Length: 181
Image (cartoon, rainbow, N blue to C red; front, side, top):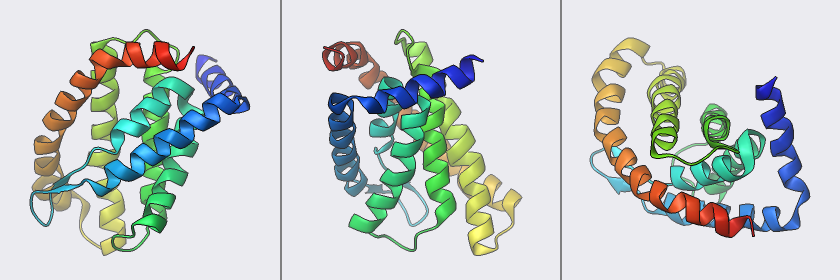
């Protein structure tokens, strides 16, 4: 029941012009962060657009996080296309918004909750789902891709993401308080 209620309350967040304006600002932040990708190798890159998705999921809930993630991914591709657009990756980003929203929406911000949300997102979407989608898209075998590419890549990325999230967690209370005024 709480699961459905979170989505219902999150949907209600879209009734406010102030919230819609803030969501648009977070989209613009996402687009800028999407351009700032650090390429480590041909297979490994670190990007920080997850910050905008985390904030939207935390402030506006899983429904808004899902819509934000899906359409944000689509808009990022339209503004700055890199490679081909693959629908399932947009679904993956949509799930990122849902994960952040389910764990962080209408809850007291704690470092533990933010770390839990980040690890859940990294493992579920980055490691498992995106590996599945890459294997489907390119006809690669799932297990070797997971073991030899995706897990090592995320072993490098997850600590970086966690450091960013830990720094961000210090400011989440202040940001939330300011946005709710």
